[in-house]
Length: 318
Image (cartoon, rainbow, N blue to C red; front, side, top):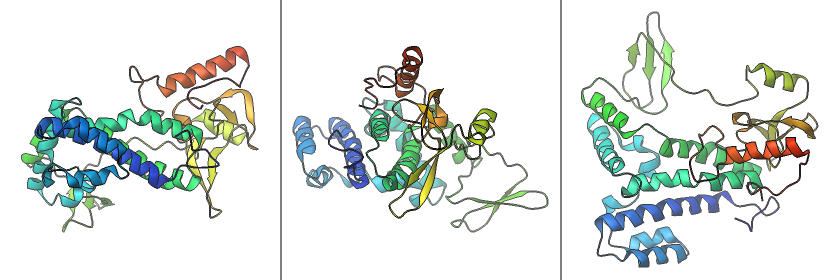
């Protein structure tokens, strides 16, 4: 990625192609080892990494259609799940693959790649090598929800328990675009895909609220904004329109808070999820052996506090 810069940005289409190729590389490497021993794995890996279009290489290999990585089905499974039987048939191979772990299960290993790529995405975010348009439409609105969907989830035993509840007709999965209306005594749940509404006297919203400094009730952040000591991060698109990333505006190389006119404070820093979108995936717990970005940010802030210097060599942004 070193050949790209804010003045020579990385196109979102190229980034998406590279990310898909990385996932496919892991998937087919595990798949060939597992189910296609007649194929030469080192030759495949060399051809894949040197091909101009590595994904087209798969069409030339004797891999059964049902074994090929179906990106559309992977990212939009609900399109093919019309009832309980389809849902169970979808979950069964996922459960079996997950039990094999990230070292042997082809799909589980491939999805683990999203976790391994997080540091790369962090560096792309820090370096500002996506245009504001691509940063919004691809990274924030497309890729981030996708990696949350594919790489974040419960342990396999919880999926097995969910499967059992679905099979016992205790749990009903609602199709996408769920709509909720209230009646005199119940909640009514419907979607464009189902023919009738489900009703319940209890509704539990079990989602984590989105991070957004524009609507936060945190008194410290509200005071920072009200006093113009800080302001929400805003990006300018090519068409002249602007959008908020929902983060507190900071200098990403030093984590210093930017005041209302965009100047950094010498002794006011922001750390953690309030910087989400300026930094990336700040709410994750550190993983061993990866030199976690959150921990490096903490070191960076501590170094500045102790030395009073804001210019230094930081591998997170250089």
